[in-house]
Image (cartoon, rainbow, N blue to C red):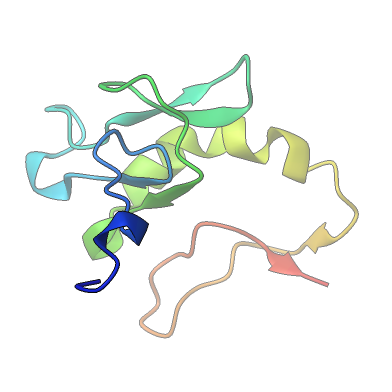
Length: 100
């Protein structure tokens, strides 16, 4: 990083990694990503970008559940998806499905 600072890219507009603000809560803008029904992607409401990954800190499942319908539209038609929603090792639900 010090020798080649030109290789460092800052993602201020969250076009690669979208981040949540769980401490604000769902009603106060804590989940800036919304489901874009047109593109089938998560859309960052503040920056109007489509982040490839969404990080939900502190088990903020409400945010992921809010954008899941748009993200799962293509995935649920796949024959590789099956079974009930898995749980993590602490019993919290995991956003996603198990692969065969």
